[in-house]
Length: 251
Image (cartoon, rainbow, N blue to C red; front, side, top):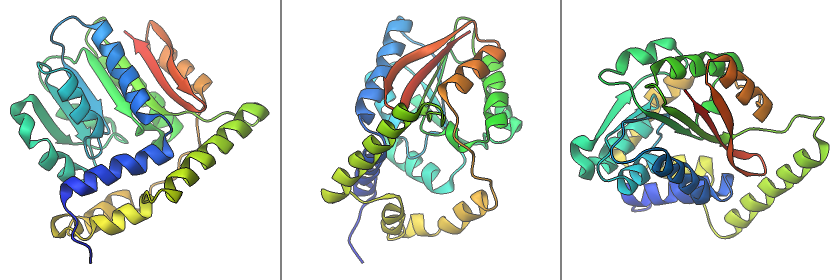
């Protein structure tokens, strides 16, 4: 058994995710740059699918006066987020809510958020649920608010060259990471189990996700059409590298 700390685990998470998402930091920077350009001064922010708070932490550091409500349903990720975000005090509120169910909205109280963001999370939902969530987000947003989703959007089979290049780029990015000693998804969870407080949450995590269907990939066309149908006045792509996107919807 290795002597691993929570801080080390979080650092390994960032490295692991950067293996699966090329230029992950650039995508984070693009999202935060858009928020800085969109809003002057304070604004209210809701993050969906916060995971272990990688983006949450960056948002709180980038915008010192902003308060963030962060939502996830994974017991392991929520435990890590709560612990690592302690230094930010009451500037962050962490909620457990299942985005696969419309009842997640019941947890959001107070003023409507001016910005709703998500990173590498919503593709885990079935396409019909993604569209329903877009409708819920549009309804929840404050007037003139913005929704920013940083995630994979796969090319469809007819886009032969783009699809092939993207898949080769993904494979190369991952292989370079593994060659440099980065742990993959499964190895990261194996290390996580060496922290007793995390290990005791693994059965609860497995129960939460047991039996959930594996969603088919969605395309950029699907996402933009879904946002438009949900009532967003303007939609578009603000950042792209191969099949990784930052998509926006303005209310």
